[in-house]
Length: 263
Image (cartoon, rainbow, N blue to C red; front, top):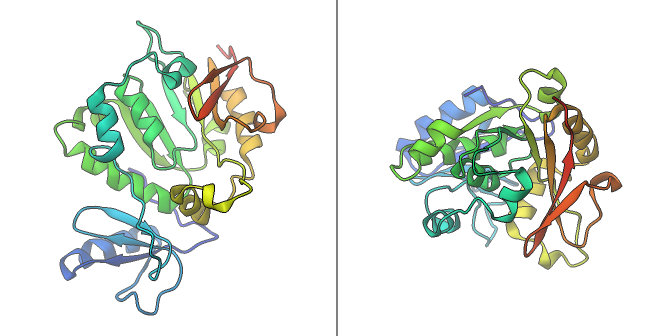
């Protein structure tokens, strides 16, 4: 795992739930440019909390909303895995999964990693590239817990990796390109803020609006060997108004597919 790089626009703060965990929180702070805080009473704004269970992101010490965190073993992800993840589901069809083909994937906007983990469960080799050190810390924690669990350890060990970098920089190098680039940029603002999920609001508070999403798509089109897949909400226009070659629809979202043929 590469060292987490400090976000130039936001200094992350980290707090530990117990004295025992303080040592690990300080190590994470020292290694990665986080600010260690002993007490929350004087802290304002977002912070990472190291608890007995996991690493969590809180927006404010006085917020009544619960935290967000990366979770691949239990919760919704655990339920989906237990129910079976078919290769013919929309995301699998968009990626180009076939009976005898599991493409390599660069996920350049992993967020909390759920789509990338689903694709890893389906047999793809998935490379998560996250540029926010805060989100990367959550991903790192979630993947470690999944690696330690018998039900998911083999998936993490064999099919998924995490790098802390800007996806555009990785793709500009052009070394050993993946067959597919997967993009799930921030969705456009909705007219009613109450409709925006808590997770989306939390992520926006950390990474902003993904204002360079169009240039990320342009880089992806020059990098991916076979295709670029962009996840979008149904009412929205294609990213950058660039018409896809075809679209795969799911209940709440769609996947715009751009064929590249960069062999």
